[in-house]
Length: 150
Image (cartoon, rainbow, N blue to C red; front, side, top):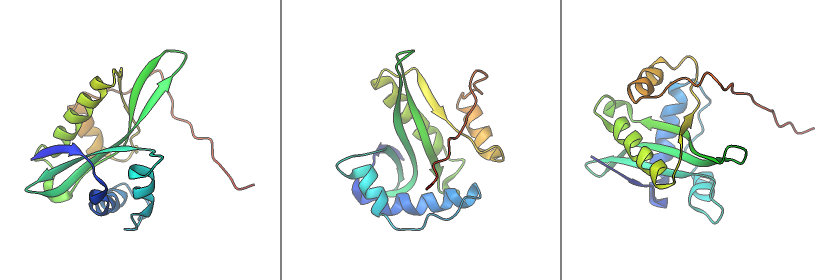
């Protein structure tokens, strides 16, 4: 088992795993079209970076993340958008390896931490992140400014 930087040839497997994650958290199925993943993760103007975990040459998990910077604190953080491990490979250390690699990436970038959002009903992920050392940030609330067409 090892973790490496995602390549464009991983997009199909990332799409498949993202469908599995969407089902787990009761989000709509994003489908298997990889065009947006290719454009935003591997194109000229990337929005995200991604680490992937392989077991016996099979991609079985990924951690998708972005850089985040606050001018008023000069604080660098990574924002973890998605972390998923294929259901049949869970509880085998794959997620922990992805978090370890993400921590190493954050250290390389001189980050203060890794920030993530968690669906309140996702008890499985809550337990996983607690074991990984994540703490609830009592100083921050998550808010959403909706973007409407009008």
